[in-house]
Image (cartoon, rainbow, N blue to C red; front, side, top):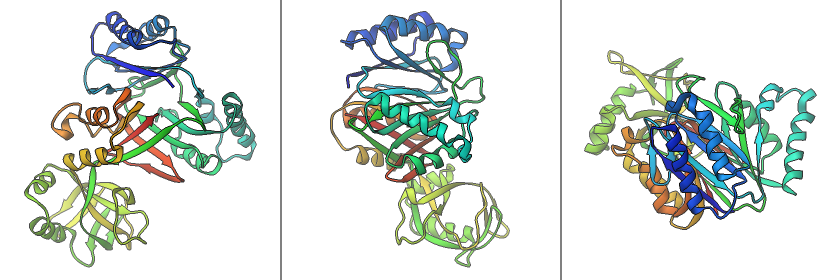
Length: 388
């Protein structure tokens, strides 16, 4: 599956479109069947002409365009300002599916069940057999991703997903288009056949610290005691006995979270065993913590610490070292220069670790991964699809 990508930060829309097209054409020995564009909203009303120009100059077939606040290309991330990154794919057992109609049909209504299944049957027919992977881009203002995942788990459990809820300050800045006529879509997917060689990875930026405790007194989102002790007393003891100076600095910089254990039957917990919650306040007089969502008495909780070094190490360890055709990546908006203290960290690790010919992606409101009947979705994470 020949794939190539390019990126530009040229502020002039005409020159940016020409630059992207030229860089793609230097590498292409084919007319791309599928063209994927991630474009920052700074180009405004010129985006339509940009998309048309790239499609025409590369003689692309299907075109997908996502307008997002931050984009990612080969070894480079654009968090602010103008930027375009494009990926050209020669069609090889992959198709483009617009899921906008899905958002208008009830996932739980038997009346619409046959309509849903007709979509999947059409995908099988177009691909000449079963499919095993979906790359899903969804507009959070238009698409009910939670309902779709529930439907997917029941009806397509064998199909893995790497996906992204797009990030934007409002629905005008955040748009998703199928084709060169920029009509908004609720969700667009690339569906890959069963013969496609794709691996999915999901990496977290936080790690559990200290010991897990049981919540023994809580009221809504206020945790009053854990293990019959005040949470602030436990945190102070943790800081003075088990955390390094660097970790204490991270705590003081607001990198501490509280994780609620999803399945407390384990003895030791990994990052994907938690629902992370931001700590939004403390009551110094009684030593309680206030988190972003309610926590029931009897819940098992543990402190989580966002750590840039640990995040980089975890991503490198997951990816290993090998060559690939391409990587499509969705880091959460909390990652980037502000988190790592330097630019391009995730994209550089990906480019160095798996030596892909093409890298493309965008910063995501919520990256998610569904694989082996398990859903991973969390803030402060990165989802990566590696092709080939």
